[in-house]
Length: 144
Length: 434
Image (tube, rainbow over all chains, first blue to last red; front, side, top):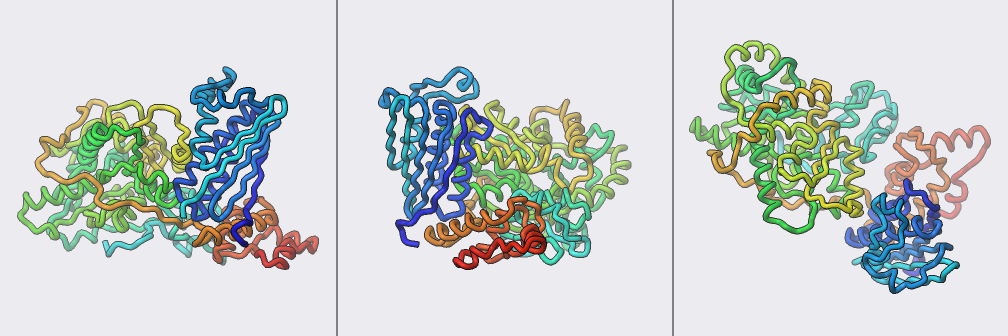
């Protein structure tokens, strides 16, 4: 295996499945913990991915998460075919939330999802089109 | 106790009694047991001495190592350290002094309550919290099983450990000082014996974390002292001495939530039972608690120390009895400012991560092995039946990769091979992935 090869996992996140929310990020976390990845990176990955997973359930009718682990980094690509985000700049602000009331009652919807994802990744990219869906790509580098 | 040993364990297997069933491998929270050649084996790097296998083994094959009363013979002056959980073992008791007096009748010269030291630790914890205004959530270090679990599975939380000694160590240090002052003997002539409710605290003496050496000389088991106590207590009842130095806080440490109550704040979480402990640690690690929490008390045993496997009484009955005993006690009876002996309650050594679950020594090796692991996992039936002797298919696959097991021991695949001639591993063998 050379450094361009990766270890690939795909997770399917289903809509409104709150009881399983966080299971994909938890699985990735447990894998990284067995793989000589520094604790700080593991933490960033699990928070960033957890927030993404929750977002997909709350806003986007579910979706898929593709995870690629390389020798020096992990790339998480979260793709949904949800409603899309009309104003990305606004959505990236801390505290901005469009979460429905029932979700807020569960303790979510504080408007910290996307900001936490950005703050916990070394590279962050978001692309969204209203009516088509949203794709977020996050990279976290491991310290050697 | 002999010299310190890394990964020493109190929990061991009585080979003659083990029939090779899979009860223990299924109840072990760290997947530290395998059945090989018809007998259970403990993987010492993974074991955290929680005692779940002792609790669940239907054949009483899982046992705990501890010392016996004769280990005290060579000491000139013997001091017992009774924990609060001991007080919950006896029926119709309304005065802790009866227990403490009875201890002086079965061979001890003096007693020093762990509950008294616990009140000093509570005071120190309150001070620590007041002096450290940072948002870091503090995790109790009193349950050695929890500390050991964090050390192997939750490295990110090591910084959250409350850097204070467990009450039993503080009790041992103070008890020795007091005995030296009282008798004029040399410190090494004093024998300090802790009466333990669990194997984990036996291990914590032999292989301590956070301190270099334990101050405890001998660790006895509650269940072994109990019968001696019963007859002595009948006599002690008539004329109990005034020994008791623990109040509501000290006695409460034997119960889940007791230590947390001692910090006199209400923004804490207290969880007990090893599965619940794991859940809280996982959520702490992921920063899932979106609330104001300052302190987390975790006890591996159900109900707290009263649930330890070396106890005699049903944990829930013991818990009820402790609540009764502490009902009319003052909040605390031991205060640092008026305590005659002094000791430093801070931990002296750093507790460091033990990466026992790693799949490789480098990232590249880990990735390669994780690829192999995923391939093997696709072939294994996923029944987690335990037939191979590992608790789950994943554990078997990991054993295989670490060279500690062989996937060909899967009984379900063997059955399929025998019945239908399917060789599930053929492809993996051909591409050298096994």
